[in-house]
Image (cartoon, rainbow, N blue to C red; front, side):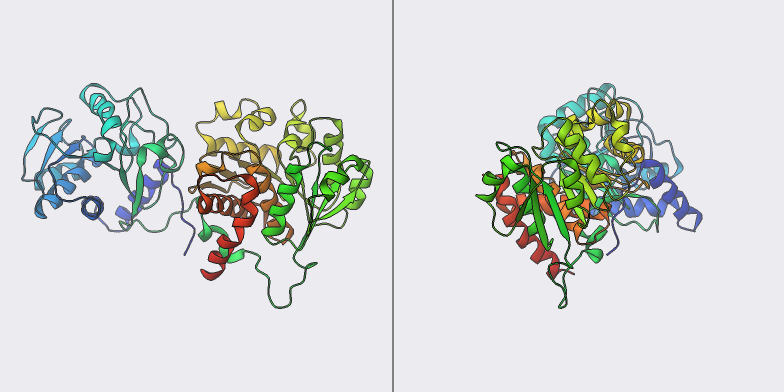
Length: 483
């Protein structure tokens, strides 16, 4: 199955125009869209009094089709119209509707289900008047709201409310592909369940994807009968000082569980004893200077540095030393923050095989103002990846992975159970372990983020970061069986 694209509103409109130019009338596309919404409603709800809220554009036209199809299936349904249809296809759909049409919010009837066909993704201004009032009401009635395309009042391209009022839905049915509003918070939360219906728009070209196995599973580095530990990749993790060694061990264990053949923690002398007391399959080597670390890393495939490494000159020098080797770098936490006063010093030594894994605070330290200046997280991550010349994984409920060449992916399986100390250290280890096995860095970061979230969901409540490496094998087994 091909990777699923995420399309901007402009890209979706272009695909719509291309389908029409290729011979599919707009009215046919509207019929398919409205029928898809009605099918999704019938699959999830029993027949009940339903108000279809119709705007003047094609989103409203879809709504008229929904009403007609539901009525033909025996539903008690009526249309509440914000304004007269303003496009040819919407006018045709309205003309084909023979049921009751009333002014928006003035039906006097008690609906048990509302279908939001007011504006969808194309709106560029805040909701006003009765539409805004109904949007506010939807906040407490969201389990009774179905949105067509995107909940009205939410920007299709940013996922942000356009004003103080926006619809919330239990179900959103969109067409051809998800839009940024379906994957980025807070729009993602406002959409509820998202169903993507195929209405025959044909192939589109985009560099933004849903992060899932379809994106990277074909190139996942499974071992074969001839594999041995040296062939499966050599990963090193740099330990912090004696009282801050646990984070490095979490990363190392993550790298080992994800499949790296040899994982070694490199530790300053004072950290050897606490690390040795807790290590088994992960190896341990001492180093005292950045030159010694550079020499030790000369023959490895990937290196993780940053988890509890310390924000000081030692970490800065160690990052620069590792950058002089052939190892791909995974930089997390302190290895990011230590360059806050001179990000360009870091960017000058990175390349496209390296990965930065900041949370929003660390992102701001390295790319000041970029999140605030960008319309949304995807654009900010892409600009950061281009500026750094490396892969950037911007953590969050809607984690974004971006590559310097413009590719980007958004995680859809984010887990609230990952909100626990050390989970990011395990993620860094997962990424490093996959890169060490030869996986391309962008895809390694995407795969690691997805597996990380799946592992958290397997455990659920009570998860702590120490659990995550041990949960990865069950996810890997499922992926192996699904190849």
